[in-house]
Length: 78
Image 1 (cartoon, rainbow, N blue to C red):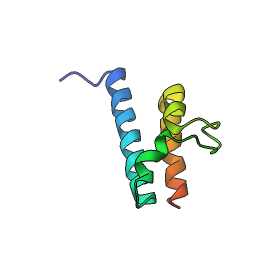
Image 2: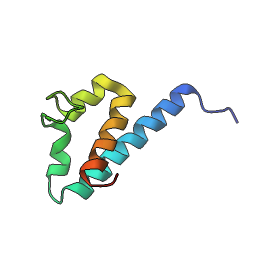
Image 3: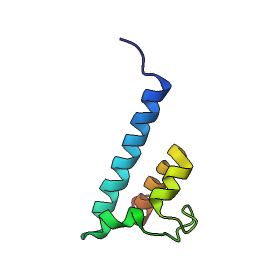
Image 4: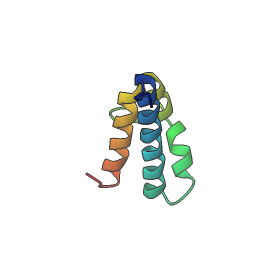
């Protein structure tokens, strides 16, 4: 079998980060806010008043991982 390519690793990292973000949001919010939160403007330091989705598109994998850590921190998971 071929070893995973850089693209494969990036795809897996993106998927893992997004799954972590959505799992964390559903643990953080008991209502529909978990689904709305990614598209709402956010004053959090890593989002610069953009929505988390916009920030993650602009910032790529590093911002996706930061977003996951941010949500874990909100949950007190650090």
